[in-house]
Length: 206
Image (cartoon, rainbow, N blue to C red; front, side):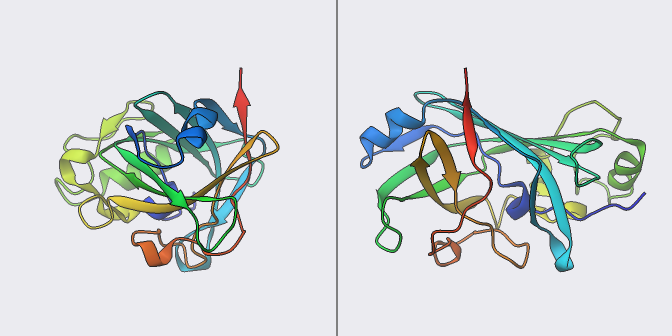
């Protein structure tokens, strides 16, 4: 089985307290549960592609994000599920892209669940205490916050623990800015997308 390298940038996960000094109306509008409408394709490491479906649950003070990564472009065979949480801020309306807001998401906690033996064996090959503190088992979630991420997957919560996003509501869809084309993450404000380009739309789940 081909194992793709995932990165925090690619995972783009967070569940975060909403600390808003600006964009108060936007805060109210994005509350609720949101989910991908299609099997999404996003840039991976070394020119690869990642296939993912996203689910977010945004409440008054918290946001939980769940990303399921798949081995195929139909999103039929899951390989790993990533869940992250932590605080976030919604800032001013973007000065570069009208109708969008600048946001910063802190990856305070993250856990992974392997969904197949190939991915499970790959994570079990990691150096000790570099990708979770316990052996991996299929369908058993493990916290990787304690090891500051997962070295084999490029997840570095110590040095890339905040993602700088562009967010927008349009036609009842929640949009997050496009990921960097090189498969890295928007770990600094200058890597936040500055154009009206987005990941797949998220629809509210009733």
